[in-house]
Amino acid sequence: MSPRLITINADDLGLHEAVNEGIIRAHQDGVVTSASIIACGRAFDDALIRCKSCPELDLGVHLTLVGERPLAPIEKVVSLVDEDGAMPPSFMPFAHAWLTGKIHATDIRLELETQVARVLDNGIRPTHLDSHQHVHCLPGIWTMTLDIAKTYSIPFVRMPSFDSLWAEVKSPLVPLIRVTVNLLAILRQMVDMRPIRCVDKVRGSAFSGRLTTARLLSILETLRPGMTEILVHPGIQNEDLARRYGHWEFDWAAELRALTDALVITRCRRGDFTLTRFSEMKAFP
Image (cartoon, rainbow, N blue to C red; front, side):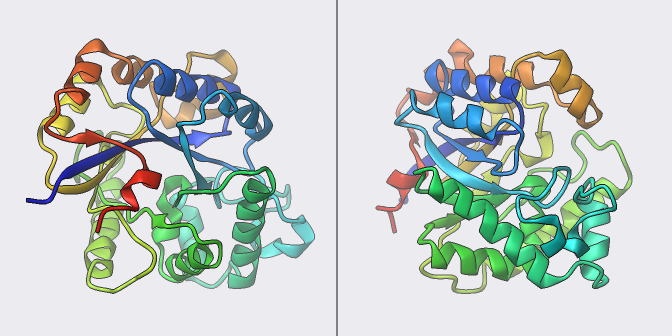
């Protein structure tokens, strides 16, 4: 039987200093083994400094096309930004603009290349690519992402999927988005993407920002053979973080508590699966 390998990956490194601190604590005192950094995040430089003390933390690029400002010169990505120079606020307006041709592929490609280049230029060799709000799974952007991974020899790309269509649903649009993402994942599993790889299963997406100890333990108890990525969002309670991103309704501090909970740490040490990193998963077929 195939071994059960998992990496617990923290998204949004570089978004905010309070998120950076939470991710580093969840790695040093808990079970986080990898993180995805936002190259255009306001706290990118802070993340670089903090990661110097974490040589065992794998780093990937959290490709970002929503909610932030681009790294590329605004005059070169005009279709991607509004009059204030900001990218679309979230997945749905971005997807609508992209799929109706209002955002140009050349602008997307330049911004993604610029983000990856910033990470590489700071001495990081990314082990994986994923994206903020899973925008890289959209048709056209998915093929760009694979091409960038091949160009820069980044071995893994996240193929997002949702554990549940209805968990934590705040809007009637959410199940529709989740169905679409899951269908795209099923179709892509039929295509040979070598040498780029995807883990066999992504868990925790339906509970983004609200992954409790009980939910995390439940995921760990139901792992299947193969490679699994558990997606998490730890952070520290912070007024500025709440002011900027409170509309997400994330409980970053609760996720940090779950990821450093003694029950979770003990469960990860039991031995019936291996808690590992993307860089170590490369050795497995």
